[in-house]
Amino acid sequence: MTSNNITPAEVEHVANLAKLTLTESEKMAFTNQLDKIFEVVDTLSEVDTDGIEPTYSMTDGANKLRSDEAINANQRTELLKNAPETQETLIKVPAILTAGEDK
Amino acid sequence: MDFLKTTVKDLHQELVNKSLSVADLTQATLDHIKATDDRYEAFITLMETNALEQAKKIDQAGVSSAQMLAGIPFGIKDNMVTKGVQTTAASRMLHDFKPIYDATVLERLSQAGAIGVGKLNMDEFAMGSTTETSYYKQTKNAWDQTKIPGGSSGGSAVSVAAGQVPFALGSDTGGSIRQPAAFNGVVGLKPTYGRVSRWGLIAFASSLDQIGPITRTVEDNALVLNAIAGYDARDQTSSKQTVPDFTANLTGNIKGMKIAIPKEYFGDGVDPKVVSVVKAGIAQLEALGAHVEEVSLPHTKYGVAAYYILGSSEASSNLQRFDGIRYGFRAENVQTLEDLYVQTRSQGFGDEVKRRIMLGTYSLSAGSYDAYFKKAAQVRTLIADEFEQVFGQYDLIVAPTTPNIAYGFGENQDDPQVAYMNDALTIPVNLAGLPGMSINAGFIDGLPVGMQLIGNRFEEAKIYQAAYAFEQATRLFDKIPGGDQ
Image (cartoon, rainbow over all chains, first blue to last red):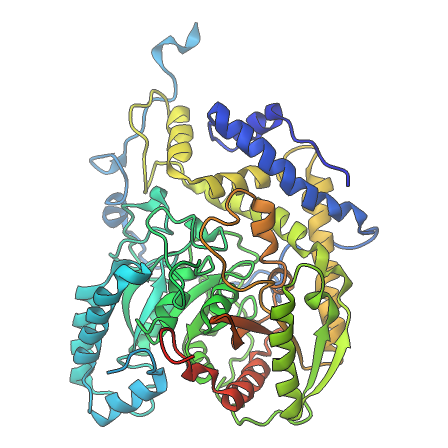
């Protein structure tokens, strides 16, 4: 069996892409677990897929169109009730940059 | 009233006769759930006020004999959005989330007069096969509370098996309706992909997810599918295929039906005791007049690998929306927007969800896309083609639903590889977009064994026909948890 041999550095890189942060012990646990999962996943390499079209969906048709009718879908007040922090009619979030970030 | 034995059809008769009012039935159902849920922990949220209000309205209008689901209480897996009612997907991430609309399936059941009584426990974001990854509680198997209920629709299957509700909705991405149905001895159908609208279902893997009914009997299951199936303009993947009356073929007659038995579903890793119960079930179908032949589906063994790449990749994409901005959990004491995203996601998601996001992100990342994501999608084509060839010659495929019966809590938690193999017999059906059902085929040591019936796309009616014939011949649904076995 060809194991992919996932490294802790790769796990950290992927966590960054996925916008997750891991503790050292989580990093080690995920490295071991992903390594085991890739032992299973790597069996796919045994399958000859030359010239086989990939299937990304089992739907039975192309995009479906609806008639172009305007509907009033304004639910701003209701939607804002679910936001963790709001100000008037806006959702409030922290600043993108901190003051010390241009060092 | 003996809730454990009552079917949708029986309740309907009582409501039509007015020997029972909808308000009384609804109240009794809520009381029964409250009295029993300490034991099963199947529900996250009860919808008491909504349910009683709706019941009153239906009593005022009256239940006609044509309205099969009017006044019937049901449970909802907590990944289907309910207007104004907490919807969590069993995640800390959505602990405070109250959607502003109802999922299409719930709109349709509401139009049919059915009454949603509560939201059911599940694996977090439907990821898992034991319901152990829920942020909230651990649902217990209806037959033995020391065993897992299966997952991810564990709450849905248990609520029906334990007699809390006559039917429940589940969702199935890799077996999440059929596997817990098998572990709890109830009827669970994953319809053809596109048969039932996914609008309002919190997405896990969009090309695989499908909503379906969990019931005590096959006929009840067909009645619920009748109500929820059909085209929905709000779901781009919803099919315009005609919806037949799924109860039409429930005759008990399956003479001449051609059934294929895939040898790979009875091989290594499948408990010999499970094999023997399911083979006895197949012999029963043969005795009822079906022609049974062995076939081969050689790519079955690659289903799990393809599924974990495709499912996790879609999950990593779908779960990007959980960023702490517009709804759901938001981390505190953060400095920047980037920090808000990272802290929110790291604190809001559980381990299994993080594991799949990581697996998916890895599979989609530069350098891995062709080797993993595209490769898995090509293997998916081979699996779907294999099924298509079999359905050129046969009406149905019959096999075990799961390799094992329900096991103890925590047994496979440390090794995801082992846990993932539990779905090996259900996953190929999702990859190919086929309908599949689990029905009870018998018992091992007092625990149910699931038999899986797989049909060609949009041929749920044939599944119901065979399942009904088997159920009427064996009457296994007369055995109830805690009852005479």
